[in-house]
Length: 147
Image 1 (cartoon, rainbow, N blue to C red):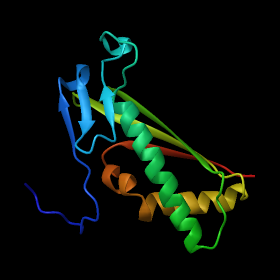
Image 2: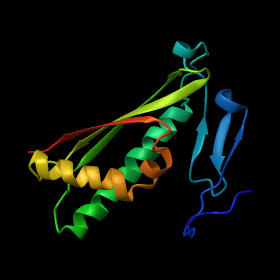
Image 3: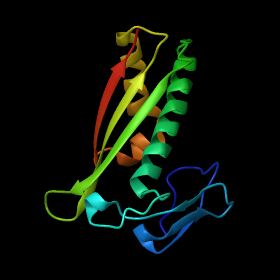
């Protein structure tokens, strides 16, 4: 196992059985999800199930939103009421295999678009752990909407 390049503050652990047509659950039982491959990908698309992409989108949106609040607080800016919508797509990639791409739409109702964009870009470039983890590995498009 590789050594961490961070000093871990918290570690989340999840266990999956059955892959994309199985079940994933965290060891503390805070997340429990039944999975199935969507019909668009040739799977059964079972009701009341989710996909790894849905889980990734939810995690990235929440992480980015928290990081945005952190950055805004450092700049003494108010971003209350902001929403982060993370569209996560999966599909074939050049060179074979599959990849993911993200479109992140950040709406900041308390700031002009230019100010909101500056905070969002700083969040993406310097603070958000998901942004750091994915940089150079997936396409991430940022869209910013202010007042």
